[in-house]
Structures are given as structure tokens and as C-alpha cells.
Image (cartoon, rainbow, N blue to C red; front, top):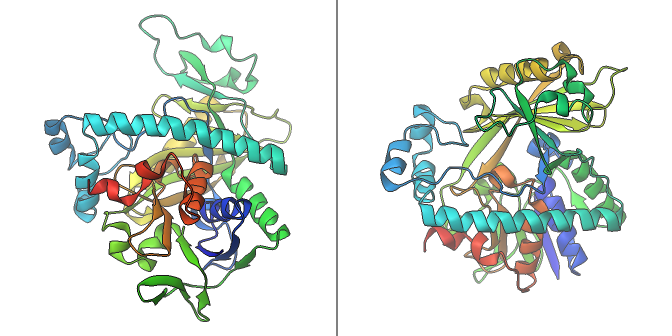
Length: 397
């Protein structure tokens, strides 16, 4: 079976990898001049988190109605975004119903466990380097009322960089690790090329080839035919797909700020991810640090990135002041597509021969292995425990 995968970012590369391992012939089609551009270039993922974050908190009907014009707990937005993405916010509010929230939490926990197992198994089998942190240290700005939060001194032995941290009352540790999904994506690309997978760059898809309603390939400068097509194209996916192909589900871009800064040459390597109480993270990656901010609804030009960049810089200077050249970092942003409930749309579309792995949202990189496996199983007609929870029709039931 020959499958065309549209998009050679992290999601597309992992999907191609999963299809190839299950016996399919795969061709990747990418509009950019090289794979791993856009969000895949600066992505960092989490592994082993016991209770993964949801895009919005559980809420009663009255709370959901009030929240439509203001921020949710984990996705920042204001009145401008409320107007621009009204359909998305309405669908997200509906997904906050307590029963839906609880069912989704179970799915996220299962995805976290399964994707971590898949990732580490593939790394061991194929020699991928994950650049994992040693764990996550959560820094507290105020003392816990029950006195269960250990003091900072308890942790400076395992993470000496915190010796100079300012305004810290305590630190707790989680087994959650972070890993460089951008570095992993580059290794995936090299692995696929070594296995003779074609990656056609500078190929912009302008439409889908059909034959009696069956999707049979892609319209490009030179049309390409295949047995099946999988769309993994990130933010550009809605431009390629017919709206009914994913059930007219309202999708939206979400953005977070990223600040990369080099470690000082004679400073010891920072081994643990350090996270503030409000969720911003300092992630160690080889000889530099990657600081990651909150998620905002909208594209970078519509979000207050300057304020987020300033907050990231202030976080680094406060917690690890001696570790890096804080005045010489590089500001980036990561913008991805999200569904209203934060889970991706994976599996068969409404068109025969057309399959989806889109709108991964805040966990697109975290659970990339599980999402790719579910996609490959859908294409090849195999059972997968996540098919029902990830298909687009969940928004119409």
C-alpha cells in the first residue's frame, strides 16, 4: 500500500515512521524547502506526566457561559480572540462539561502512558537520542500551608544551579521528563531517508485527486497518485482539506513563546527541568536552555508575545541567574493547530482514502508516537484503542 503523508514536521515524520514499520510504502510531501520547519523547529515535549494538562478546566454550565469572553485556566485569550475564534471558544466551552472533562482525562492519561512507552521503545530499538531531562522541579513562591513542601536547600545537591535562585520558598519534584522533539524529528528524518523513504520538499499541495469520490492522490505542480492520503500539515491543514472532511469542527491556532539561551561555558549542565508555579518552564537541552511560556489563542501577531518573552527572561534571571547569558538569547514562538477539546483529530475523514492526524494542540509533541500509531492503524484497517476518542465525529455525538 502506497501512502502519501502531507507535511514533514514532527507529526508527519512520526506518522511516516509508524506506517513504514507496519509495512506500507510512504512518500512525504512538504511545502517548505526542508523538513522540521515551523513549530517542529522549536518544540519540546513532556513524557511520563501522570495527569496531563487539559486545554481548559472542568466547569459547570454557568461557569462555561461566563468564560466565553475571558481566559480559561490553560489557554490565554481576551475579547479580540473571542470575536476572531468565536466558534472554537463555543465548542471548547461545551467540551468543559464535567463528564466530558473526566472522560478526556482518562484518555489523556492512557495516551501519556502509551506514547511514553512507544517513544522509549523506538529510541532503544533504533538508537534515537531523546535528550531527556532528569525530571521536573517545580519552584514555589510561597510556603505551603501544610508544611509539606521541602525547602530549596533539599534540592540544590541534585540541581546546583538553583543555589542562586531568588524568591523561592520551596521546591517539589515530579517524575515528568522533558525531551527535545525538534532534535528527535531531525533523527527521524535521517532514519526515514536511510530506509529510502522519499521526502518531496518544495511541493505545495493545492488540492486532492479524486476518482468517483475516492481520494487517490494530491494536486501539486506535478500530481501524485497513491492508495491513501494522510494530512499532517499543521496550521495549513484546513487550507488543504474540504471542511466536511473533518466534520466542520472549528479549529484554531494556538501560540506559545520560546526563548533559547546558551549556557555559560564553564557552568555545569542543568539536568532538571525547572517549572514555575504558574506553568512556565526552563528546559535543559544539551548546551543550552529553552524557556517555554503559556499557550495563547491565536497566531503570534495577535498575541501579546512581548509580555510573554519578558516574563520568560525574568523567570530565567530569577531562578538560574548564573547559568546562562540571559541578555543574548533568541526569542521564537511555536504556533500549532488545536481542536476545541485539545485532543487531535486522528483517523479516517469523511472522504474515502483520506486520513487525518491534525490539530494536536498542546500535547501534539508529547503524544506524537501514540497519535501516529493510531493514524497508521486507521489507514491499514487495524484496531486501535484510541480510534473512538480521537475521531472527528466525537464533536457531533
